[in-house]
Length: 377
Image (tube, rainbow, N blue to C red):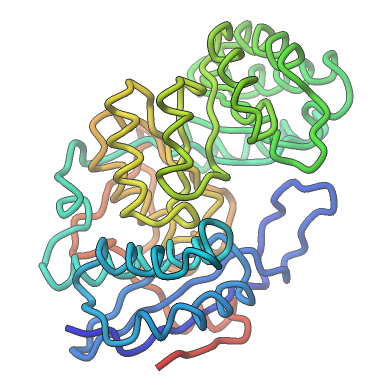
């Protein structure tokens, strides 16, 4: 079974604001789907956390290497792309594109074998997993309203991130966290994401340590990205003393970048993003290394329906997985799949057991959110 076509599908019209200072409008393109087709009629979907223009450029670079390759050898093919684009890739948008292609090839592999991807990744440790609703911080009253709506949608865990937390004062940060805890009560888990990967992040280890102490008073499950993502020494020191678990790693790509963070115990929770760090192939390797170093794995997913489906399959095959991130509300997750994701009464998502990623895209609805498509064949 050979690869004969790749279609690049930028998503636009319902983009969720990512929290950066400049904001994001719905028509901006932050996510891109890729569809890989084979000479036997099977196809697979992948998702890239980067713009369609960058994915298109990367696929143009990779297509001569990809065309005609086996469609049922995702690990070999994605590594071939990575090794062969070393001088122009080694991370960044080329790796983001490889991530989406790798996910699509695993989808094809599962369909060809008649098995869910989780089983091909090593087996199912669980049949369901808790999603946490992922939202941005806001002014206290607006935050309260948003939290109430997320709880009403069935979530039993919620992560709040980025502005205005960490951008004004310690007193205001605590007011936000106290508002959140008072709103959802003690039975809903809360996580806090400082968004230290924002440009020119002003805080260091002392701020992060004191903030972690405050968060512990409100039973916060973890403290995410409290420092800039290149400050590994700061993370090591913070993780050593923090009373709440420290999480990070969403901006890293390739397993080699994750290794020192795991070997040096820079975080308690590592957060590989399958839509940009190398796909399911690299994420499985990262998870194995994390497991060996007793570091929890929670996939990062500011995501699409395809990305969430990949996270579910990935998390099913991780021995110690506990959560998946669920951006909410998000039309790219909730409107695109032919069968929507459903949270059960206990706040869990079932992990699909149908072949491949266990998801398909409604092509008519996709037209509503598609930018300019590009086909390589």
